[in-house]
Image (cartoon, rainbow, N blue to C red; front, side):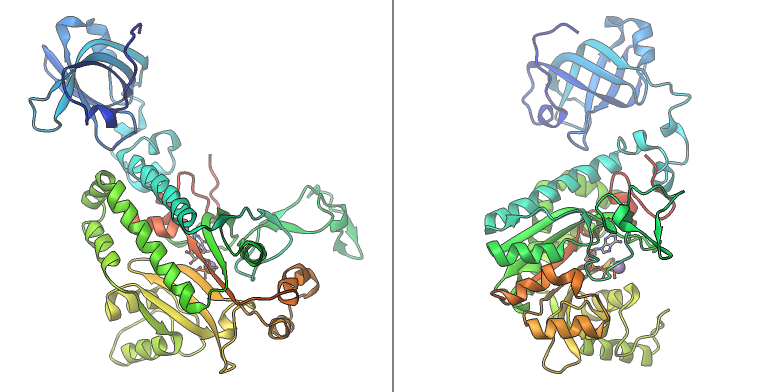
Length: 467
Ligand code: ATP
Ligand code: MN
């Protein structure tokens, strides 16, 4: 198409005043009308909303009009005019239409009846072009930006921790091994794999958390955060676990557990507020299509203080619930780790708001958490949200060299591999704290989607790494 008019994104066209010559480009959502006039809904991904193209069929080749079908891609030049229909304020009176790519209506998979989220996961090109994924990708982008904005405004340093690592942060999850060894011909020494022949000369894996390296950053420049991919080879086929997910891990020198909780609460409220302020069109769509209570729930979280409860108190609440007839699949008593059903009971049934659990039994938490005086519990914190359960896990860190080393020994872990980390306690140790927010767990909450596979463009789960 030869024209001097520059292309405008549909998001901006919909906000423009009528009366000018415009050029729009995008994919056809629908075409309807009669012999004289066709109405084409065009979308370019800049917004959930379509612009209506009005095509007077007498101005165009019959064949061109026929070839415009759902999924085809177009450039449309015409006049932006006030819309007579009820939908949008403006529409385009088409003068010239160019088809970039046709889309065979017989073969286009969107025509199929089955457009369930599960089916969509198997059709990569189409999935992202649906209204649902357009909305999710835009919200995901807005949240990523807001995370950087939040920390940048606070003067945190964005730290890049390694994805390939020798350390297993906490036994947080099973790790994916990284190797260049020939698996059909593995070098063996004394009956064991000889990793000195491997690429790094030692056994390495993909990171399950950047925290330990993050602590080195925080005890150098004060406050850092990481934001990157994280890998866990846990065979947990749940709607809340991915094998590859993104995590945000702030780590702060001179923060105690109280400061840590305050930051976590401020952080998630900031993100939810940012979504409400900047993603309303998409949130409305998701609210209407998937989760009627979504916007209401987002607003309610911002307005209230999260409940802070000790693990011990939470156990009492759950035991009382069991005594009064509530049934859980997994038993609860002091010393057990909470399952999602327990977390959701506390949040949704008992408190009716987000909950921050603190002071966990040391045996269910990682070695680096600060030990309380009682000798039994540690200063961990989990932030629990409605519909999801845990979205944040964190703690004040053990700053005492002696206590940290003793704990590592008690757990039968290798001190040798951790010397680089333990050194932070040896040389100018400071009280410090941090936490990890699962990016996709946050997105589950903000979008109202039920399955974590549906808030990431290319989900990786056990037996599934397509595309
Ligand atoms: P869970 O008990 O739900 O498996 P966790 O205790 O293993 O979580 P942490 O190790 O504390 O989680 O990780 C910090 C955060 O990372 C969690 O609060 C959660 O938001 C997120 N997260 C952990 N594992 C996964 C996963 N497999 N997929 C997506 N997000 C995850
Ligand atoms: Mn886990």
